[in-house]
Image (cartoon, rainbow, N blue to C red; front, side):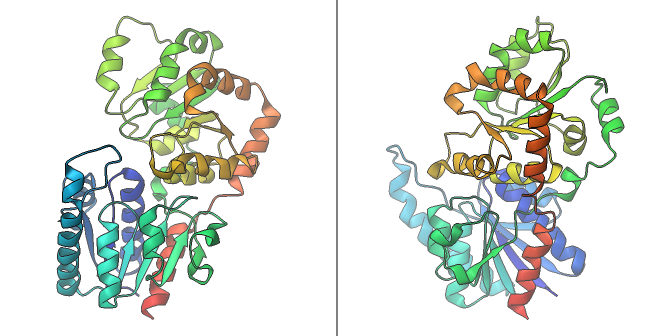
Length: 365
């Protein structure tokens, strides 16, 4: 049983929410456990983690900008400063174990922990790991992964295939269809398409819907379209005079479980946590990987499913022309939908969070 743990990382919801899921599972097993998060100053985790009820400390760390930027010259000093601060946090808190979930703060925190000798685990969410986790893999005790075949990047003896932690309330959809149709004011007799581009949104997905509005409206399907924080105001203004019919535009989906429950087909980016959730809700899925991520890992995440006939991929550059055609074609193909549903379900890891905490407990025992 774990009594004190540090969880480090963040930057996006894809890192933060799995971290919180791990913390919640530790607390479920031991309500008296003390858990401290370490994040990056100014990043999303500094707001989301306290909102979930956990304490967090920030490091002055940032990423390397690929284009020329003066801030890159300060990066070595920020890394050294963050290492020193992380070491101090760990020595003061004295955790039994440290977990890194990815994101800027994860590197210095886990490096400091391994130097001090605190048992540590990397939780690698993607099918293609980033540079930081490849470096950390040499010194941590275990690497919890969500995809097969990562022996190419990590020491095989350290790898445990656990899956990605997901928020239980997000993927518990059994028997919620009627509640979902009522909540979103949709008709149970119509096919429903769910479009999700993450909390900030995805410009390509939004542009693809706008470019094909008439086709969507004429198809007779209903659409729950989550456009994201960055695009909601602009889209609302742009579509103010447009009759959207059965297309519902929302900034953020508050009840993801109900949205998943009523979806006949899901269109999504291919972030690691989104993909893990989709495997658990077992829905026919079209993935449009973002090209704007390090190592092009979303394409690699998507291809891990496509190669097992568990999802369909549409390239970002082709989405405006192909995405809506692809979803309407899929809705009409009952056999293909059933194949995708069966194959994506086989990839789900419903006990991922529990498995990761099991590994943490093994380390300290």
